[in-house]
Structure formats: C-alpha cells, structure tokens
Image (cartoon, rainbow, N blue to C red; front, side, top):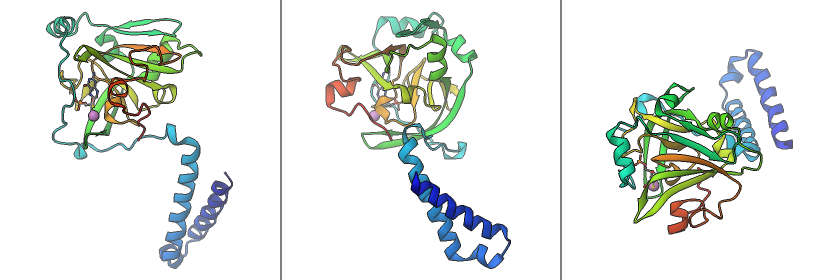
Length: 250
Ligand SMILES: Nc1nc2c(c(=O)[nH]1)N[C@H]1C(S)=C(S)[C@@H](COP(=O)(O)O)O[C@H]1N2
Ligand SMILES: [Mo]
C-alpha cells in the first residue's frame, strides 16, 4: 500500500508537469520512463491485493484463431446424451443445486434468453497449445445468485455428461472464480451454437484458469462446502487421475 501511494504521488507529479504543457518535457525519455515505472509499480502493487479478480486479456475478432483445437472427449458416450442430441437438447435441463436456497432447472432457451456476456479469450492447454476463441453465455454468478447460493458454500462443482473409461469428467472452482465476471456457462462459440466437440450444449469458460478446468458438457452445477466427498476427492477428473493441480490459475 505504501508503495502504491508513493508511486501514485510520483505519477500525479509527472502528469502535473505534462499538463503544464511543456513539449520538451512531454517528449523527454526520462519523463516517459518515470511514467512507465509508476504505472508498473502501481500495477504490481495492485496485483498483490486483487490478483484473483483481475480480468483475463480479451482480444479482437481479427485475432481469433482460424482453428480452435478440440481436446479430450469430443462426444459423450451415454444413451442419455445421444437422446438429447437427437432432440436438439429440447428436453435438456441445466440443474443448479447443492447448497442453494432455490434449486434451478433451466432449459437452453431460458439460458439463451438470460443476460449474456461475450468474450474473446485465449485458451491455454497444459499439453502445449493455445487458441483464441469467442464465447457467449450466462455469467455463472447470475445463476448462483438466482439460486440463492448459501453462505456455507465454498466451491462450485461442474458435473459433465462424458467420462473416461467409466469415470465421469467433472471440475470445480472456488467462489472467487465462480463469481469472476469472465466466468460464464457458454452456449455459443465464435458466433455459432456451441458444437458437440467443444461441449454442447453448455460448457464452462473460467478465463483465469487453464484448459482442463473449462468443463464441457455441463449438466449440473452443484454448490458444495468441501470437495473431499466427490469422486476422487481432489476436485476434478485430471486432479484425481493424473495429479494435475486443482488451482490452475493463469
Ligand atoms: N467434459 C470435458 N471437459 C473438458 C475435457 C474433457 O475431456 N471433457 N477436456 C479438457 C481439456 S484438457 C481442454 S484443453 C479443453 C478442450 O476444450 P476444446 O475441446 O473445446 O478445445 O476442455 C477441457 N474440458
Ligand atoms: Mo487441456
């Protein structure tokens, strides 16, 4: 805090000089440097206190990757999912339950009619590839607020329709990520309905997290107090089965 205030003072002083309207000072390398230093120092001091809630970078349409890779499962194997796909998810419902006052059951039409956010972000997979794509969906915090998430809840779990050799895929985030403005349940990608390989009908985009946290084929969102009683107890499929870190913040 002390550093932040001091640097702000410096920047304010330097801006005062610029406002005085001296072209030579304005263009001088030392003033530019001073401004840059102030900005960086303020920024890093800021990040010490608000790192978790900072926004992930967003990109322009022109920066989007021509091809967004598909990774992991590209189609859930269950009969249930096949039936939903055949009826274009007309009877599909997203369930929001667990530690909530009012459990929700929402159709895809209801989600599409709800307030939405569109963001163009970079997806980073631990296997060594990245891609920039555009995602449209319902802010997760709105659903949690509508459901009346209880104060005893500490994590939000995403239950998926797919599995690896019979072990279901799932993921979880804490409430900082669940309420982050760029955490959405996306039903659209690159201006189209979300495709099956990318997680139709609904997937998580939590933009401050690595690729494996971005659960596809989300069927149920459950608010819980602890992750210990779920599946392998480590909060996610890859966390349980391959030792991936639960906190995969970027
Ligand atoms: N349900 C489910 N979600 C998943 C996966 C998966 O296999 N099943 N793979 C994860 C991994 S490792 C990555 S990199 C991304 C890939 O998303 P994409 O196929 O849209 O590129 O989804 C993540 N979410
Ligand atoms: Mo990944």
